[in-house]
Image (cartoon, rainbow, N blue to C red):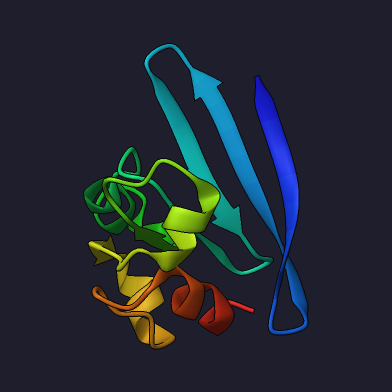
Length: 100
Protein backbone atom coordinates (compact mmCIF):
# COMPACT_ATOMS: atom_id res chain seq x y z
CA UNK A 1 0.00 0.00 0.00
CA UNK A 2 1.13 3.54 -0.73
CA UNK A 3 0.08 6.75 1.03
CA UNK A 4 0.77 10.31 -0.06
CA UNK A 5 0.33 12.94 2.64
CA UNK A 6 0.48 16.72 2.24
CA UNK A 7 2.71 18.26 4.91
CA UNK A 8 2.85 21.96 5.82
CA UNK A 9 6.23 23.31 6.91
CA UNK A 10 6.55 27.01 7.73
CA UNK A 11 3.71 27.91 5.37
CA UNK A 12 4.96 25.78 2.47
CA UNK A 13 3.53 22.46 1.34
CA UNK A 14 5.53 19.32 0.60
CA UNK A 15 4.51 15.71 0.02
CA UNK A 16 5.17 12.79 2.35
CA UNK A 17 5.22 9.35 0.76
CA UNK A 18 4.96 5.99 2.55
CA UNK A 19 5.28 2.73 0.64
CA UNK A 20 4.50 -0.32 2.74
CA UNK A 21 6.44 -3.34 1.56
CA UNK A 22 6.93 -6.76 3.13
CA UNK A 23 9.05 -6.29 6.26
CA UNK A 24 9.82 -2.61 5.57
CA UNK A 25 8.31 0.78 4.82
CA UNK A 26 9.93 3.23 2.42
CA UNK A 27 9.59 6.86 3.53
CA UNK A 28 10.23 10.05 1.59
CA UNK A 29 9.41 13.75 1.82
CA UNK A 30 9.72 15.63 -1.45
CA UNK A 31 9.72 19.17 -2.81
CA UNK A 32 9.99 20.43 -6.36
CA UNK A 33 13.81 20.54 -5.97
CA UNK A 34 14.78 17.51 -3.93
CA UNK A 35 13.88 14.99 -1.27
CA UNK A 36 14.84 13.22 1.93
CA UNK A 37 14.36 9.52 2.39
CA UNK A 38 14.80 6.66 4.82
CA UNK A 39 17.87 4.42 4.96
CA UNK A 40 16.92 2.64 1.72
CA UNK A 41 18.29 5.60 -0.26
CA UNK A 42 21.73 4.94 -1.74
CA UNK A 43 23.56 8.29 -1.58
CA UNK A 44 26.72 6.73 -3.03
CA UNK A 45 24.82 5.67 -6.14
CA UNK A 46 23.37 9.17 -6.56
CA UNK A 47 26.78 10.81 -6.09
CA UNK A 48 28.69 8.40 -8.32
CA UNK A 49 26.73 6.62 -11.03
CA UNK A 50 23.93 9.20 -11.27
CA UNK A 51 26.04 12.30 -10.65
CA UNK A 52 25.10 13.80 -14.04
CA UNK A 53 21.47 14.05 -12.86
CA UNK A 54 22.36 16.54 -10.10
CA UNK A 55 19.98 14.99 -7.55
CA UNK A 56 19.39 16.95 -4.34
CA UNK A 57 18.69 14.37 -1.62
CA UNK A 58 19.39 13.37 1.96
CA UNK A 59 19.19 10.12 3.92
CA UNK A 60 18.11 9.48 7.51
CA UNK A 61 18.50 6.03 9.05
CA UNK A 62 16.43 4.27 11.71
CA UNK A 63 13.20 6.14 10.97
CA UNK A 64 9.81 4.46 10.85
CA UNK A 65 7.39 7.37 10.28
CA UNK A 66 7.29 10.56 8.24
CA UNK A 67 7.47 12.58 11.46
CA UNK A 68 10.62 10.73 12.49
CA UNK A 69 12.08 11.36 9.02
CA UNK A 70 11.52 15.09 9.45
CA UNK A 71 12.90 15.11 13.02
CA UNK A 72 15.93 12.86 12.49
CA UNK A 73 19.41 14.11 11.64
CA UNK A 74 20.47 13.28 8.11
CA UNK A 75 23.15 10.60 7.99
CA UNK A 76 24.34 11.54 4.49
CA UNK A 77 23.49 13.92 1.64
CA UNK A 78 24.33 14.22 -2.03
CA UNK A 79 26.93 16.60 -3.39
CA UNK A 80 24.13 18.67 -4.97
CA UNK A 81 22.38 18.94 -1.60
CA UNK A 82 25.62 20.19 -0.02
CA UNK A 83 25.82 22.83 -2.75
CA UNK A 84 22.54 24.38 -1.51
CA UNK A 85 23.52 24.22 2.17
CA UNK A 86 22.07 20.85 3.17
CA UNK A 87 24.53 19.05 5.44
CA UNK A 88 24.74 15.70 7.18
CA UNK A 89 23.62 16.13 10.79
CA UNK A 90 20.89 18.71 10.10
CA UNK A 91 17.31 17.61 10.64
CA UNK A 92 15.20 16.41 7.76
CA UNK A 93 12.89 19.37 8.35
CA UNK A 94 15.74 21.89 7.99
CA UNK A 95 16.94 20.11 4.85
CA UNK A 96 13.49 20.17 3.28
CA UNK A 97 13.14 23.89 4.03
CA UNK A 98 16.38 24.50 2.10
CA UNK A 99 14.97 22.50 -0.81
CA UNK A 100 11.92 24.75 -1.26
